[in-house]
Image (cartoon, rainbow, N blue to C red):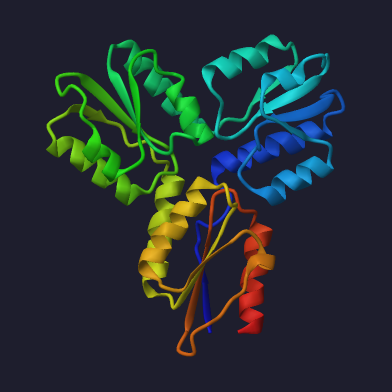
Length: 284
């Protein structure tokens, strides 16, 4: 049995930066109580380990009322502009661990919107990254979750639009969405803000899944980029499994299987990937 692990599986740059930021604050004796605004990343194992070390996840600035000393680390997905301001008003130490690629989108949306352009964000409306991006628009802003939504878009074609994407969006669906806007005659400036790590991860997963008999995708249940990897792999490999940890793996291999592929989302620690790889190699 051949086991192929994607080279780009696991923590991306932004996630590594965010997680290391929290662990560094834990070591800082002057940091006081440490809070993360939302889960620092979408991985329950990592968040659980931080909680054991005293890090508390908060979901609103109101939870900080009455606290005079402490450190709040903003999650890798970022927060809305209003929440950022509310956090700064608390007087606590605020550490922004927003992924730099997400911060770049905030800047693009803010600048393009200030020029009078309407903004189109391709992504999931209820994802924290997209909620943050939307908040930086000072004028009309629309969230499109894929080609089907793009087909239903019936706004003024004379308006100038700037289109950006959630960093972890499915690159194939992004291209389909863009083509629909172009074909429908919209005056639109396209800025592909899918990050390179996502692009590489999805391309590699697609290539491995196309020749694998079984594909295993490891990621958190709330991880957008992991779900998109599962979607991509499922289209090319019928026997695709989505798991969070080795405990979730109930693997049944077809008798003819000769290649098992493994990939993982941007918020999956390397040790979990190694556990799954070693288990498959040892037991099949």
